[in-house]
Image (cartoon, rainbow, N blue to C red):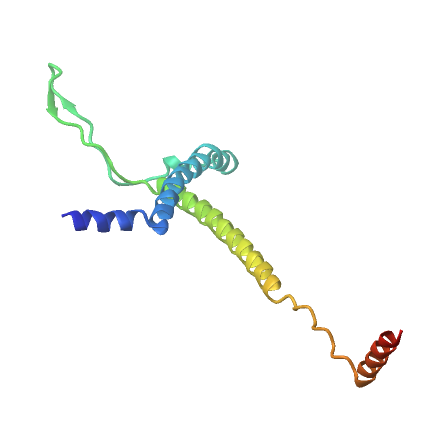
Length: 155
């Protein structure tokens, strides 16, 4: 049992798992923000401009039945709610998804750009030319140096 617990700790504390958990939490919060933007800001604008409130869009598959009461007011037949296909909510969720997808695309594009810039900078540092070695003295320079040294020794 202790071995399983140790393996789980090693797995759970790996950087990738922790990063993924943080991403899921931030993604959930971001999803709520986007849902609010769509439901509270974008859809009302669409309703005003287009004259259609998308949250009310639905197709009735089976109409509802009102409750039937007898003369004393007792319920003879229960009311049955209408069966509807709420495609307005689907449209709202599709817009939520598209906004989240575009935002994630931009974030990934930005991270890739930063990664590319970092990689180019590292390659530039690695590829920097090493300082050129001192050139070998020519035969004339060697002879002149010997003559200089001989003259210094005679003084």
